[in-house]
Image (cartoon, rainbow, N blue to C red):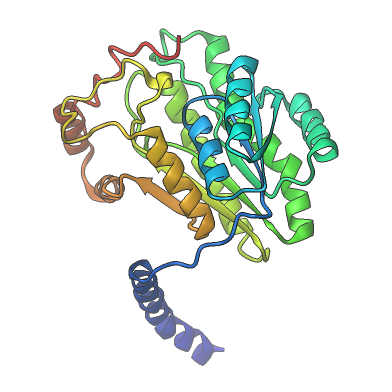
Length: 302
């Protein structure tokens, strides 16, 4: 028993080095991309913003069917009609993902009218854009229900069938703010941190489930109406991401079965810095880059 323990202890660091080298090599080699020709994609918050571009990108990459969920029928209808004109079968349903019963009911309707969902994209999100003391209680609850709990309900609704088919993918459009919070968006940062933990646990839990994968996308500030008015100190150095780019990278990550995507890739450095830098140094970085006050001019979606 002691020899087994000793040998395992000696082999473990070698295995770690091997897998790190393997991962680096795989990053340099071209990845094999899955065909989307038989995929049925459901996107929450699919009527506008990143969700709209995700729907268009999945359609352009050959998805068989695209399903849009959201709370604003006008936006859903416009996006649906645009995708139908492009030649891809598209459907939309009104659904508030923060409402558990509504999610389960609409999931049943989707299965009956459209078929089994094989790619679920949890994109729906809201931001209140205020500090804790100034925040309305109902608005805080709304953020948690939509941004965090909504993923529980949608994933519970569609994941069992994916596991049964041994074919499926769960996607989460998260935010780099889940790993590096800012003042003035306490509801959003908290809900996204919970969402990140949810996806990290789910990804590990599905390692032994053949054919079913996960992708978590962590973009920097994206130029959509949801974060209208947000300002950074050096926009030339830290320009907002285009929603088209986020959509393209997300679909590509699904096709290559990539678990975590940082946009831009330099955001990885932020995660590394947070792991060893003292708090006061991080605070000075926040002040220097302007992230400490970037929500002061926040307006949000009108």
